[in-house]
Length: 279
Image (cartoon, helix red, strand yellow):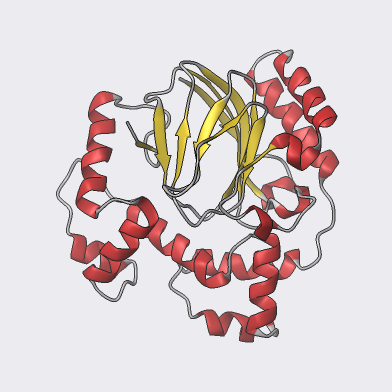
């Protein structure tokens, strides 16, 4: 697959981790994406893809793309034989300025681009992207569209600062201390988080702690699970294992087996690291 990405210019870089272009044959027809402390916006330029937001929901098809706020469960992506899209990896608080509704309404409920920005606007954007001269121009066009839509969002400073504190601590932070430091009540802070991110500070902290524990794991080598759990601030290995199953549907041992499968079947692939084979 071809994968091109870059960080956007200010002020978008305070909201967005990177803009990316993805095209080609996916490594697997279905990929599982564990929850992460971030949001996702995809403008689809190829055949429709499918998303299943948890094992208890139906699979839905997305033709024009999708918007996913910070999730609390694993998502399953079903790709066509060849895919083509541009997208945005968004910081947890970064999607709010581009939404017309509270993020809590979208929590674990992916929506189409049309539902967020309107049919005619999305159709025009997709047409411009489809006729762009290569991935770099496509990312510039997407960046310009985001700049055009950027607006003021009440409470964003509070949520951004508090989320940054959570991120810096790898999720191991006392939630009660956050509201005290911010000078607001815990109820007010939780309400703002749900409005702008879709989840509470506690849930976001859990996502940061989980990813901080799991992403550094080298599946090719031996793993001391007790040390991994303790290093991430989990009370014990049993607590870590329970969190692992809730976030991925897998045990830690099974997760490593699936990661090793990806490494052996697609070494050096652009998507290696977080998505997992679901086939």
